[in-house]
Length: 81
Image (tube, rainbow, N blue to C red; front, side):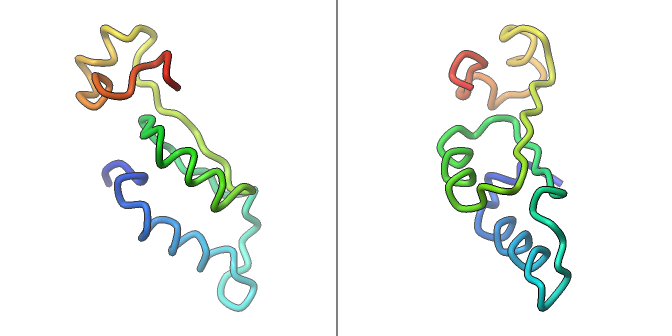
């Protein structure tokens, strides 16, 4: 499906529809979005949808291995998360 925080507007619109009592009425705290760590959009997401959970998919226990598995790990390093 790809990285949700690289498709920020569509993901947040879908979540807003899910939590709207006039559509689905899902509790925001029951929704979790998983990200590899797009830091600027993580901050934006936490401000825009503070009750929705955000999970980091680290993919590896070390930065070196993470960079091999997840190419964007070279940009968003574990210590910046």
